[in-house]
Image (cartoon, rainbow, N blue to C red; front, side, top):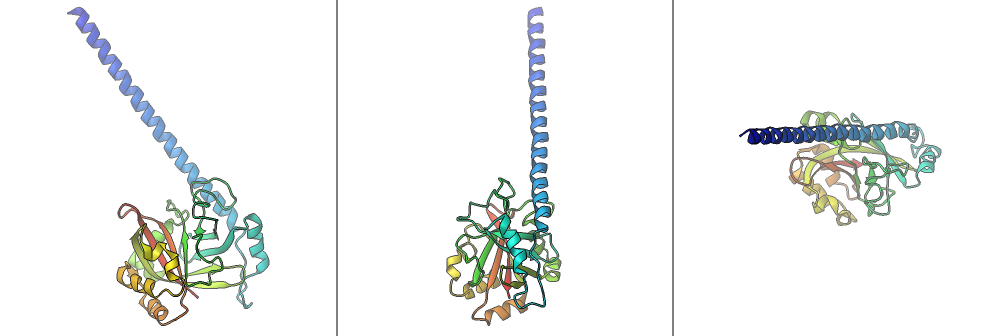
Length: 254
């Protein structure tokens, strides 16, 4: 009986020790995960702060509206830079790059360094001059207004109605953006993620938006439907409504 009690006591101590070690390991891993996550966001914010100093200058009084020399400063950092995107009322104020494929900048920042936050990038099949009817831009969904997280704001009715403008600065001109739709779609949605559908015109995309958008700016959409040369910029990020959900904000490019 004594031996049994001793064995039971030893067994209980071993179980307790294993539980304690397990909890310590879980706690250590959780602390590391939080630290690592903070590092990712800190790095993304740091890069964004640095890049803002390179935001191309615009001149409202000149015909193109952009100071070409200032865009070249950005391209000196990365020749893949094709635009600078700003959405008014949000923290979205980033250079847009375009790689050889859509994996190039998924986890690479504008400086060419590995970064989980990646870059804001134009679909590799789209026209870098933004003169074709449709352009698709991607960005990671993070938090604290980093990268394309603020696209979520357009899923709030009041915000969508109050914030409808932005700018797309290109090497030779400045384009005005007018937000006209916010959608949540699957990652495989052809209307959004197959730019080749809209090489000639975006009439089918506009109809899709009218039928599926969470919110619409009817005035802008109606105008686009009457323009044979309408151009649309789609901005996409991950979402949580369902598996492989994506938030997409559409803007008229003027």
